[in-house]
Image (tube, rainbow, N blue to C red; front, side):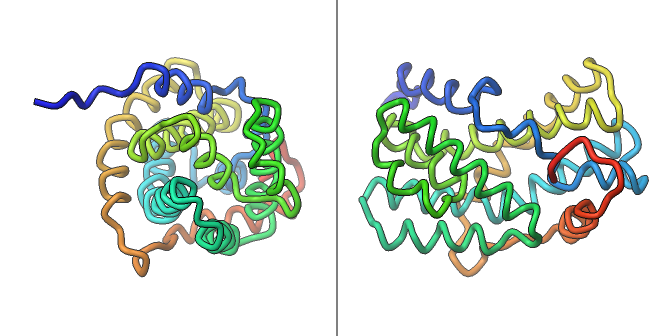
Length: 227
């Protein structure tokens, strides 16, 4: 039977790509969680889990991940038109100014990192700023990370960053943060598997609460995070 093991070098590259030490500034964004805490929508470990599971299933799982899959395929095929189309669709799908600004900031920051790591294809994407997933897919393809593993790594990185934000905002203790990550990890394979099967016309986002929270965060009086 053929082995399904991940290439060890590609696995290490994926660890590099999802590391919180990657200098892209993701720690500065809560994606609406800060307002959700302020409004009393998220108040404890259980409600934090419910919030993050909802976003991962109905936001990441139905928008970011299926588009990331298509960006991975486009970079693999060097299909410039598809790259531009899916990059534009992801940015346009961000429902408020803060989320669009976050997408572009993270994409531009990752492009700078990749240029330093000698992935010079990122250079032409720095202006105008690309979506974060576009640069993430570029790194994954050039570092020989398979599509499914790319989606899993992207979802993990998002989840870890959101849990770290929750530790500060709710607030929660370190043990609660680890329990949250453990529970979120349990649901990740199913979310990725579903994203792999979505047709183009099914791609979209269905988390109205995040859109409202992010829009209202723009005028929130006291803020720790940029979204």
